[in-house]
Image (cartoon, rainbow, N blue to C red; front, side):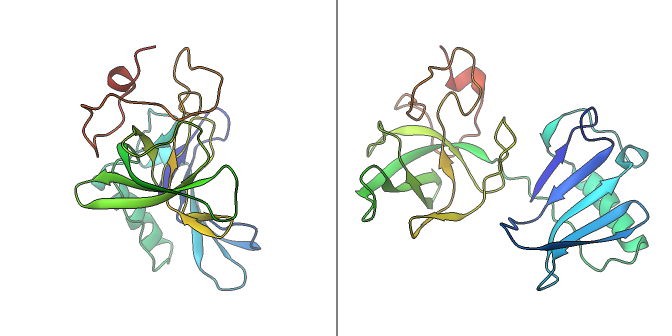
Length: 208
């Protein structure tokens, strides 16, 4: 679940992205200020657009935003008033965290990709397919988990690279739009004392 808002460029519309629709054909059902975007073939909801959202509450941030439980409850109240049976779930787990590569094998169908098992929290490991030239077992880096929005606006969802499942992305300084980021390939390298699962903090994790 990704909440995104940009009043200056999009208007007073909160976009709630539920899942990746890929190239599927979409349709829209709108009732007053609530629009449900769904897969035309199955009817499954992939997004909500909440128009004039500032009439419900103010959002100061831009880009990916994180709402309080009270704000999400207000959205669900509006959905109910408009006759929608579904609810919006407030996912407050951090989406950019410190991760550590604990296993890595070469992708069987690529000469530059690796299949990495990346620890991203206590007892939580995800598989990420990556082509970073500096990837190695033991490396600590910043991981964008499914539900993250990158600084340039692209969204992170589970996917596949050449037939291998991937559940996130290990990030380079440039992809994180960090100041003075080197313009070369390679994920950000953190010191060994960084704690796996810690939310990303540019002030702590980037000193260039």
